[in-house]
Length: 129
Image 1 (cartoon, rainbow, N blue to C red):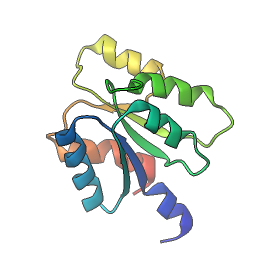
Image 2: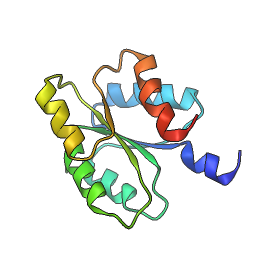
Image 3: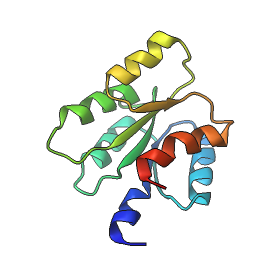
Image 4: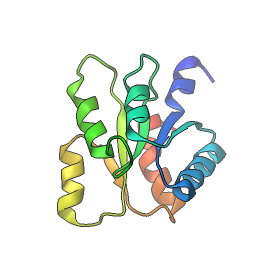
């Protein structure tokens, strides 16, 4: 695997719920992704603003420090950085809520972690694998 492929296989998970976090981490690691895990929004933003940021982030909508939608908005405001594919993880299912997340910069969302295929469906296009 070359350096570009390795970088594309890096994923940030920002999730404060330990069960959801562990399930995502396990699933993505099984698929050979290099997973970085944080439990609050401020740490997620710090990592996503770094020079070596992952190109894919799964962000819990509601978490301590900063919500996932706020992170999306902040990342999209920065036009001087490489594009980061942002997925919101949410229990929200109202159309208006999901549209709000997309309007604030999310590329897609996951509403049900019980379906691994759903996770694979939204992660694969972002990484090219």
